[in-house]
Length: 89
Figure 1 (cartoon, one colour):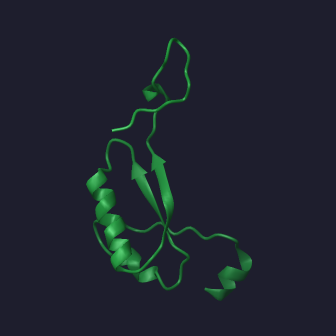
Figure 2 (cartoon, one colour):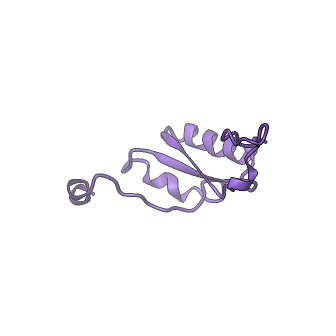
Figure 3 (spheres, rainbow, N blue to C red):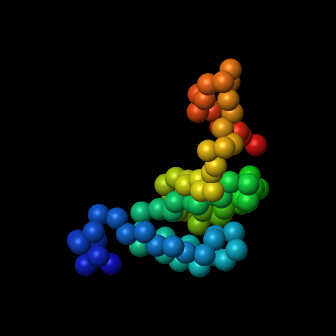
């Protein structure tokens, strides 16, 4: 890992979902933290809670979340103007 650390600022590894298998947790000693990918209208709050609890139990960091599958058509409109508000559920 040191060779890679000297050559690159960031290395992103795509791993299986933590909610399905815990293989990704084996990397915890070699990485700065995890970024969770959350798919709109697919990933539930329960899925997120379970994954966050798994990370806490493994004593690892969640660096953030990346929301994918968003649609610009789902934005709310107010008086004919679009103020960039999004639907939350």
